[in-house]
Image (tube, rainbow, N blue to C red; front, side, top):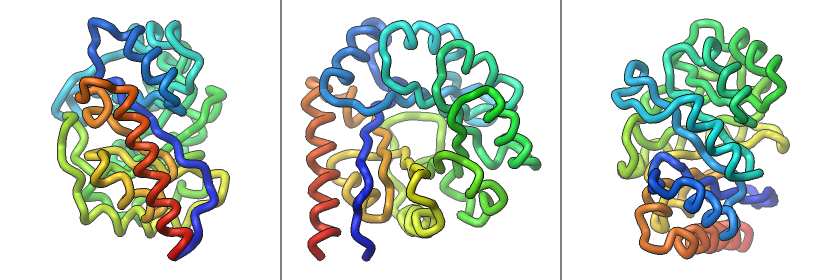
Length: 229
């Protein structure tokens, strides 16, 4: 197994935070060492749930200087990307399943001056992103079916993480989202993930700051395990 020599980033998913205390929750995880914030935008069409839209992203932007890693789980990501960037998104990730012209989608989003990512659902094979993998800043592997937080990590996706990791260049991020917790974060890190999205594992804990730190400790333990094997 290849040595791990890249940074490990923890990205709390605000989908699971206490919306009545949004600013406080953001400041809490930022102070605890969150590297970026993950925003799950759902339209009720591409995924069977509706989360939040542009105005709430603008409100989040006022609360933090952290990167707003905006995951558009929507049917028309290119159409709506400009509004999210204007609201303060620093990175826009679209789903490969939403377009027949992924390279065009990458180009249009990149024109907005932000980082560009592509995401795959659990049932989508790694080769589905062949046309764009060398043109994006990050690849987001979903390890649950998108739509609802609190689901269990799908173990069969680990092999996909390994495959995609072997294809990426050092500057590209490999993000994993879905069922990431103390018991699964090491598996994703060992497979090659460098950016770990966690929602309920952080905000479902009575002490989100402590939960975030524990996740980072577990991730770093996995790094040490790989590097010493």
